[in-house]
Image (cartoon, rainbow, N blue to C red; front, side):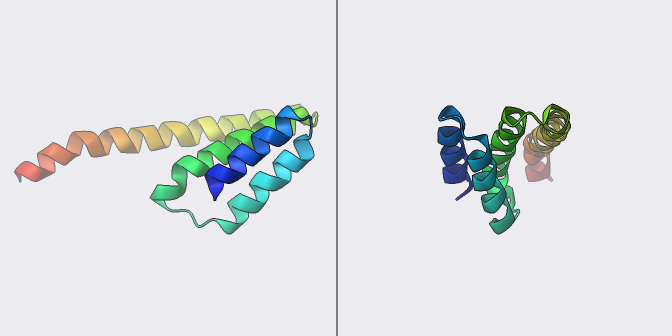
Amino acid sequence: MLRSAYLSSLIHLLAGRPRAAQSAVYAALARSPRTPKSEAGSLLCRTARMFALTGQGHLVLGEERHEELTARSVAIGSEKMLQDLLGPVSEVN
């Protein structure tokens, strides 16, 4: 659901409809439960939301969302890297 909302929002953005793009991702994010499996789709939607905000002229808000998105992406990457590193160690024990 999140990935389809992301694609829908991209279509809206390319057609010059940033409000429709924002609506699509907000609705999907509100309905979707946060699970590790849905994290990639959530990040995609949040990226589209950032573009939709800047497309509507909300540059400061778009920049804030960009900073949040960057922090979340780094956190997810760090968690994944830690899991990859600890996986073989925990198998030995």
